[in-house]
Length: 199
Image (cartoon, rainbow, N blue to C red; front, top):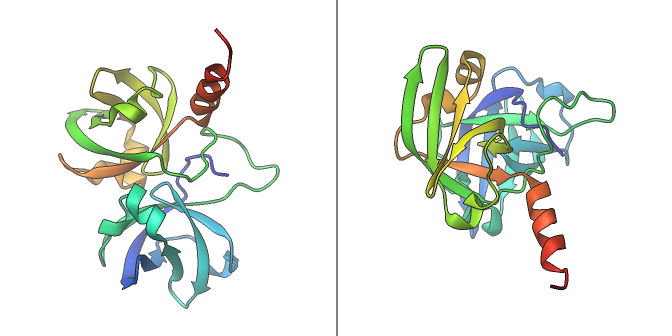
């Protein structure tokens, strides 16, 4: 379980295809490699992956076929940056919202507006996901916990403050870039419970 509060950004040091999987070596900027343990979960642009190897200056994870089909990870190349967050520990502050690290799908940046202190981004999103996104609700975009500003028939928008812009990959997004999306899990649970009710 995660909060969507990004701890660090990492650089892809290696990206090797193995059959239907992708092995990634990630070089963190400040995340201390000495504190990582084999088998722990780390969120990469919102996708939960397991640490399989820890080297001198990077750690290794593997993204399987299902992950590659649902996320943007398959397009990662050497030199690309990713948002990183380690899983919650018992007693940690809950500063964002409940993020599982299980990506629901992807969105595409349709509008980018720099408004001084805020950067407003609007993402074109499949209808199957858009129905779970509500104004002032929570959403994880590339692993970042954000509040939804507005929703229309095709897009939702968010505003990010300078700190988020400078310390995550969101500030570097260009029109047409794709991002991983995880909608609020509560919305999906409520939908399932209500669909089981008799009329």
